[in-house]
Every structure is written in structure tokens, then in C-alpha cells.
Length: 470
Image (cartoon, rainbow, N blue to C red):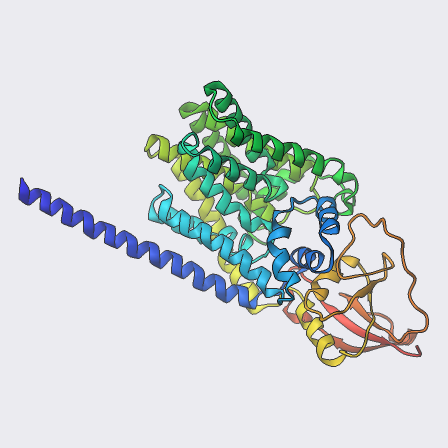
């Protein structure tokens, strides 16, 4: 008996040591690949917009701009100290990467999943690229979701921590308001039934009431929302599922079928095992579809599509932890889910490392190097392209031709008074993406490398022209 016990303990220790080494390898490999990609990543307009806003505006104006853009304040506040200290814009990328890396460490060490599933999910394009390398407010979502899943079974034991995590999730991105809202509502009902400590739920109530008034009427002011035509439902579902799984619109029918089969299996399993979990997950997913299909229907990008993973991962985590069962149909479905996303990973990483994500850094470096003494530049074309250049520029504002204002970022509500182009100043024109007629007095002096650009929806190429005769 003693001999058997010793053999068991030895086998257990060896397995634990092997698991520990595997976890360290997973975490280290993820970090190394991410760092290499981040260093080669050029920022584009959706990333740099936040940086330029917090760098160049006061706190009240930051609040106003964030509200009109349709995002909670948390990401702006996290980036703010680095921008105000005058640090380079790469510091925002480091913050994004560190937040997702923290979630990777927690997921690897604390989630109830197999090693294979951890690898499939963590090395998916969403976790390796969309959430981490693309430095936007999505980077806060994984850590908030994983911590909420980890603390769900102990929510009554640690009500303050659980309440704060719900509040943090609600402040990450508007797409998370459905999941955080239903988690908050159920937690409030549970606390009221048990007549326990009311302070945590009071904090939650104040948070969501504040968010309601914060977002009230913002979609009517945001030009990025009202400027698009709504897609028919079938077209939206097809486009969403294609983006969700594979790049370049490869086999959209397979992607659509796979996505909705996974969702049916998920809800069926949850409904059979725990109707409360089923309700929470359904509301979280339905809200994402509602926002992308009815409000932000003009800009369904990979990051937005990948957000759908998080209510699913949250439910799978809680289900595994609560019941300690395998749920084979659900396991196969979610594994398939992650394999599809994993297919995108090499596309994303290799493309960003080998190609220019945008021409913004190149054009800014040329201006900083060759045109440092010039004070005014005019961006001819869409003012969307102001912020990616401005983020890399030193103390320069750009005059946007189409909104007739000096700025370092795009004004989504466009309510300020326009300023006319000064007539007595020598100026250069930064032209986005297409050539101008040099017979009209424009002389081309620099262009970014358009041969490296591949995805027109997200990438820009810039040219600088000197307007002669001024």
C-alpha cells in the first residue's frame, strides 16, 4: 500500500512538473511571437484616433469625444498618462500587449481546459493579433472575461471583486454591455434574494445608470455610424461569419454553417445543464449581433467579429468548472470554432510583419526628417487619415480639407466652426491613395510604398505634393 502511494505521488509530481513546463512554454512562445509582430506593426486610424485625442485634449474634451465615438472611457484613461508624458505612440501598443498577455497567463494557469484547447484558443488570430497587436479597447476584454469566469462560482464569497469585474467589463467596449448587463442584473437579483451586502450591487447600479446617460443619443452624433447603409439581415449574417473565421472571404458558406451550428450546440447544452448560464450567454451574444447588425453595421472588422468568442469562452469555462464534465458535442463544436480562427493566424502575423499596415509612419518620418521647419500641412481627402499621421508627427497639426479644420484626429460630430485655408502660407498637400494632376501646379515629392499594401479596407498609402506658386 505504501509503495503504491509513493508511486502515485511520484507520478502526480512528474505530471505537474510536465504541465508547468508546458504552460511556461505556451506563455513564452505567445509573448515572443506577439512582441515580434508588435514591433513591426504600423498603427492605423482606428488605433491612433484614441492616442491623438488623449494627447491633445483636456479631460472634459476627451470625455466628449469618447462619448461621441461610442466607446466607454476606460481605454482612453489607460492610455492618457503615457500620451500626456510625451512618450512615443508605441507605449500604447505596449499597454495593449501587456493587458492581453496578463489574460494569457491567467487563462493558461487557471482555466479548466485541456492543453490543446489552450493552444488552439490562445494562438488563434483573435488572441494573437486582433486583441493584442491592434492596439484598441478590445485588449481589455479578455482579462475581464477570464477573471469573471474564474470568480463566478465565488461571486458571493467575493462580491466586491465580482462587482468591480462586471463594472470593468462594461467599461471595455460597447459590445460587452449585453453580457456585463445581464451578469449585473442576475447578480443584483441574487443578492436581493439572499438579503446580503447591498454595497456591491449599489456600485453596479450606479455604473450602469451612468453608462445609460453616457451613451444616450450618441449614435445620432457619430458620423461613423450614420454614414453607412444598413445591410439586409442575410447579408449581415454571411459577412459576419466570414470575417469571424477566415480572411479574404474564403469558403463563406462553410464559415456560416460552422458558426451557427456551434451556437445551436452551445445553447442546447447550456439549456440542458444550466438555464441561468444559457440566458446569460444568449443575451451576451444576441446583444453583439444587435449592435453590429443595427448600429455599427458599416464597419464589421475582425476585432468586432472575434468579440463573439468571449461569451462562449466564459460559458464554457463556468460550465466546465461547475459540472466537471466533458460535454463532447460542445467540446467538438468549440474546438472547431478555434481551429477556424487559428487558420487566420499566419495570414495576420506574416502580413503585418512583412507588409506595411499603413503608410502613416513612413509619411510622418519623412515629414519629421525633411519638412521639420514647415508648420502647416493640408490633408486633401478624408479626414479619417489625420490621426495615423499625427500620432507619429512632432508638434504638428494637419488642416483637413473636407472638414476645413486644423486637428490631429477626426471630429466625429463635426460641430465646431470650420477654418478656411490660409491664403498667404506656403503649404504641402498630403494626398491619400490617389494621384493628383501635376498640370494644376502640384509637384510630387514623396510617396509611401504602395507595393506593400494589400487590404484596401484597412490600409492607406500617402503622397506628399508641393503646391507650386504659393
